[in-house]
Length: 142
Image (cartoon, rainbow, N blue to C red):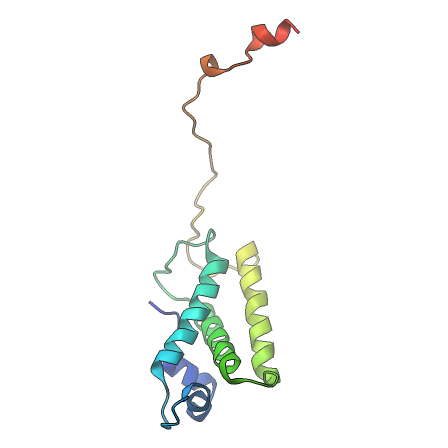
């Protein structure tokens, strides 16, 4: 399940901008495949930061994750077309998204959902004291 949709992108930037960023064929419509690719890029990046802290895929999408997915997808769309620098607002939103993801990864910001690490870890082994190569008797002789 993607973290955001085309409708979410349309709420963040005008549809005309999305058309301009995705319509390589000049048809005057949004190319849904290119939008889906941008959203997939954003979601994979988010999952990369969340992996190990939260169980993936997320069963519910927190609002913050949806916002980050929108910002990262828009950045990706601008990256497809931009020969010049990115618009300042797009770059600022991208940098902020990465900063927030780093804080979530470190545990400084919680998403309000259960983390994948639910308790203290423990080591399991099938070794016993009889398996030791250098036991106490051998070590005492030196």
